[in-house]
Image (cartoon, rainbow, N blue to C red; front, side, top):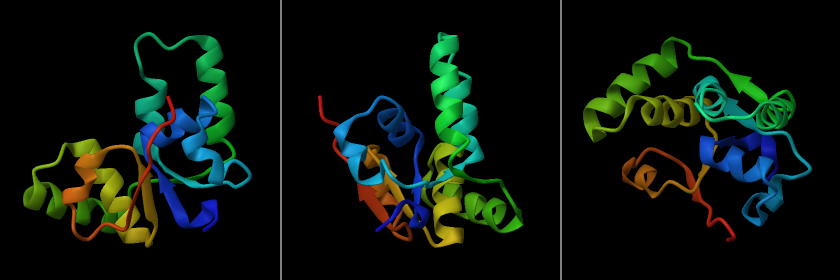
Length: 124
């Protein structure tokens, strides 16, 4: 698996930016990222300028996926079916609609049956 066939969840990108070994398989690849993850990452209230720059440097190397009609419709379906939070529903819908494996540490995604999921364990 290379990075172009995965969608990195927000927490996976944080681990990637911080050099956590759980994202080691993706260090030499670009990967897909939902526009929702970018908004989540860059809108943390206490984010420093240095952190912002590091996150932007990673995101600029990624394939950014915007919300289109198919993702919108799948988001609605997933949110109704699984009662997931809106950002998580959008990220899951993005992975499903684009045929990507979602890489995340968030076990809450496990309940979404349609999702091709790869759970990661951050190295502490």
